[in-house]
Image 1 (cartoon, helix red, strand yellow):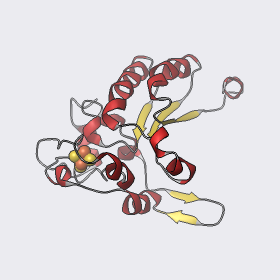
Image 2 (tube, rainbow, N blue to C red; image 1 turned 90 degrees about the vertical axis):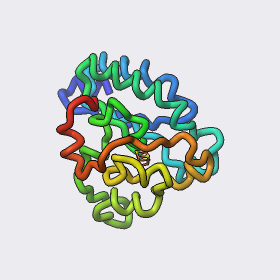
Image 3 (cartoon, rainbow, N blue to C red; image 1 turned 45 degrees about the vertical axis):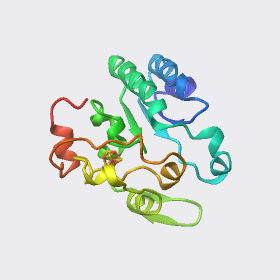
Image 4 (cartoon, rainbow, N blue to C red; image 1 turned 30 degrees about the vertical axis):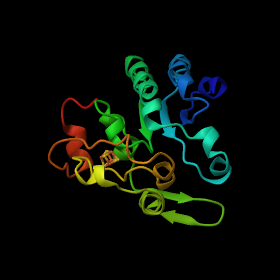
Length: 181
Ligand code: SF4
């Protein structure tokens, strides 16, 4: 990454947050800030493929990770390093809502080896994400796809608590509101 920055190229880090590295996230962000990285995305792990086979080793509880994500965001904000969090529901980002990657991400076309996925976010939401009872009372329900199905199959819904208030209708409305990071 240092070599790429020396060539005046842009570098975005996608840090996959798992059980084995979440505690190091704040320190990693300090390192990235010192390297003049352009943007960080903290992506809560999606347990597909080999990660699915090792889910007990890799998948942390969202509440366990939360203070480390908040601390990492504080460090990024202080360092003026753009940082967002992906695949991590808004109820765990209270006070940091503006750093939710999905609120900023445009409709995406993703090409892999064999196929062009149109509107990838919508497809992945429909395939992998679920809403539960807390979501139906949550002010962010219309913006949030909920957690992944495999997460709630493993840990249940106890960690999720609805965000009080009227339903927010659009990402723009939330991003423009005061006091949410
Ligand atoms: S809709 Fe559900 S998962 Fe999303 S923020 Fe609200 S309670 Fe959390």
